Length: 206
Image 1: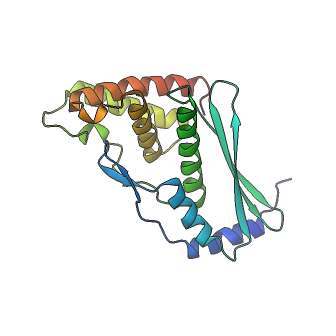
Image 2: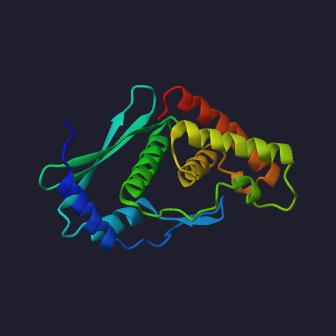
């Protein structure tokens, strides 16, 4: 029998009427856009939760495959709950910083998705058209980028903003000097990392 969630849904309706979308308080220089930090998302959610009977928790765990998992659960004071399901990510770097970055990323995007927070500026997934630099990128590489970007979205069931941010963090973790790359090199490195992400999601990364 399906669990009744009447109180939870009423709480979410009230939450939506009280929600004020946060400002983009973080800077994403690689994609030339802003985003809302985890703290910004949490603050917007906490303000809008007042008087709704709602609260949330975010569970972090080892997924057993070298990655970390996060699950966000929205709860109502009457006992009803709604889970996001697990989001598992494999850090680019196998060190505390890499794992910490993956956890923060997963928590931010799950929380934003569950509560309807607009956490990133929409660039329509067009990284290849907005990578900076002066020369025109190779059309074949640009098309390859778009194709692989779309494949990651389909395999992971993540939206374009989430995939954009994931790619951004991976590029900066692996290539700290990437802001100095030419447009062509940025696209090339992005395609390489998208290939890795495709492989991960095919092997159960989500």
